[in-house]
Image (cartoon, rainbow, N blue to C red; front, top):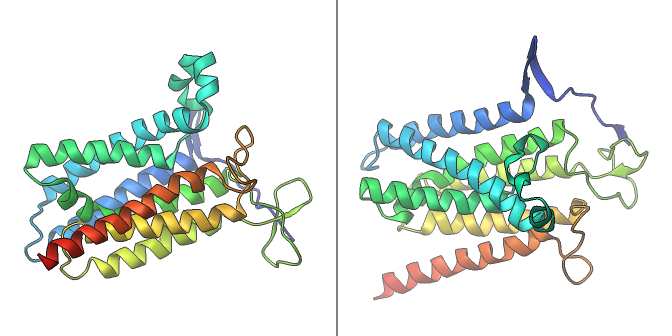
Length: 261
């Protein structure tokens, strides 16, 4: 069993100004998306230019932050919100939801598409390969902050971590960084490197992310104030991931149906 690395959550402190690693992870995610988006826009017949890339990332950033916060309150802390509605503004207390951020990004992409005369799926197909950069960076931020503790290990595991309670646990945030971040990035980058039908890249993203999240949740302790939501093992993250996978397969069905007509 390895000791959890002693990493300060503050990356840089300049007097009273403190820059936290988690905030830097957001910047890395958006900067990485901007870099990749500009490379993708230079592909022949991409239909995108650098100004549109900058704009869609701005829209997406708003969707991530607003949707992530609202989603966390609605999906994971709704009872607390009913008792104290002002909690939604206390962002310094933490609390962001991936699935809420996803819905926020969907809204942002729809608005961006209306502005630029692009369909929703033309936009979502383009940005899908960029998203894992932010997901992976965010999970590294979770690891630095000692968030998302893993479940206790059954048997011996050379990379098990002691989160401070002297129990060997899975480093679940690193599992999710490797799958939702690195592996998903590679899959989408390779898949989108060749021309694909509209909706195909979005479908692969939904299926792969939902599947990876569902699997890695088995190694992560569910949120303490929620616990398991069904069957004595299903977590809220898994519950929210199932519709993503089903929707991804539905998109593939629509593509196949359209191509057979």
